[in-house]
Length: 123
Image 1 (cartoon, one colour):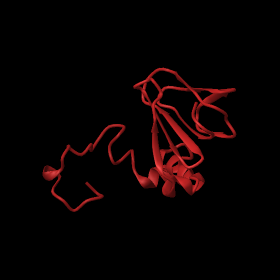
Image 2 (cartoon, helix red, strand yellow):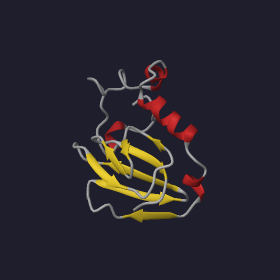
Image 3 (cartoon, helix red, strand yellow):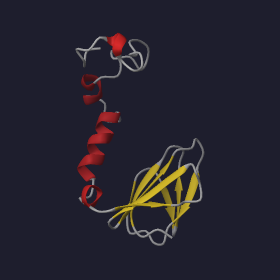
């Protein structure tokens, strides 16, 4: 693998070397030119990440749905859908929302594998 000097035979999983997920297709050089790439998405998330995400206490929130993870850090609530189907989560109030979720009052609908950052308190 181009990113490691280690023997590929010692890796936990084999390196994907060809196809759409091989290093010739998925690499930083290619992603730098693609505004919709994972690299750009991660850079955007980090740039917009509120300071509380790294300093405030962590509290897991029970959504009642094993497919949806929710937690709060400071004044923010994060919800993530790990399902291939839409899921809804009730929240007390929504001051702002980031992510591919859709809000209708106190209900947030998460698309498959979607997420949301909410400046809110959890219902």
